[in-house]
Length: 113
Length: 110
Image (cartoon, rainbow over all chains, first blue to last red; front, side, top):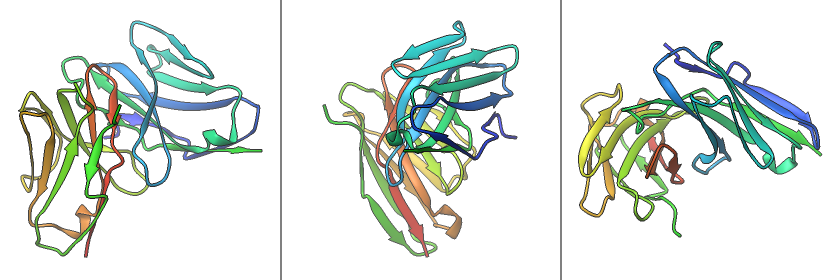
């Protein structure tokens, strides 16, 4: 049972435009959500996170939106840059079990110059 | 500051052998988690250790074991290797809810 799902395996956007990556979850116990970026042959790099008490968190070009009723979160990158091309993973954890992250399958983002 | 370090970077083993992977967390981080990532999937949780005690275990067989040392570094041990154990093994350390990952150890079982 996939508790965290990223239904789009890939996304291609033009440099300067907005990239929107989506993630859905099924477990109501999840209360903390994170986005990671991964380049080949490297470990995942933490990007941004959001607690379930918020519906938006912003850090520079990255904004994460959380819709608890829909069990959906999204990562917006604006403006997109070629260096943003990577695999993006969303992950979730539940309070009392914060050491266990449940990851989605990943979305490969390609930003074209 | 040094990030999470893992050794070795790459490893090739034969079926039935045993392997030990090592991880050093970010200085000051007391929690270490281990993940397995196979191609095309997200990382899957194997273990979490905090202050040398196991705090969580994922859905992996007993062939997988781990431990954490007084300096918070950690080892992941896999016995009786199977072809399906070929994967990238990731270690992450944390102080709060954000986990920071090392570069991983690529294990190939032949």
